[in-house]
Length: 180
Image (cartoon, rainbow, N blue to C red; front, top):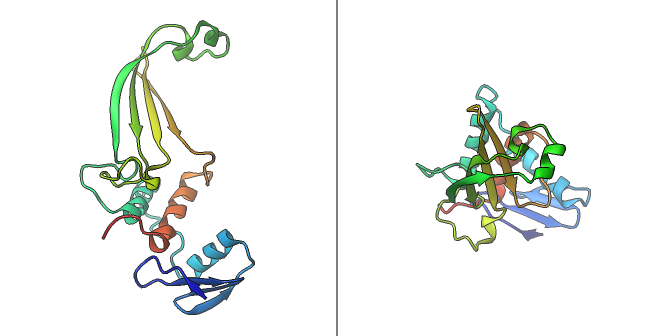
């Protein structure tokens, strides 16, 4: 079997529909993603079990396990730049929505452009720096705020915060991204 031992102490190998994790053989169905998920779960690397912590804490903990902890930086999209400005909707926008940001007046905004990962010194040209992100905070006249968060992806792989946390947890063992 061809080995893809990317994480120390963890050896995953594949030959046709046969998968091996640390020399224990599993028979897959040929779907690489489903087969890898089965191996991860069989290895006990599956979804986090610290259900007592808030979901937000579980997500940050899962990301810190992937990228490492970098004090003073975010757990994801650690590298970024912040700027400010104003947004003024086109006059036709008021016919499409009653939201105050589309009423035609200027709305102050804070915008953050960022690279992916929790690695603050990752070169911007690195394939790991994608997807790139942009977050816009609209500062509304009544003191409220509206956020718009954008990632440059063609898809998002999960439907909920719980699914995102669970997706992050096993990949730390199979595909470590931060330097030791």
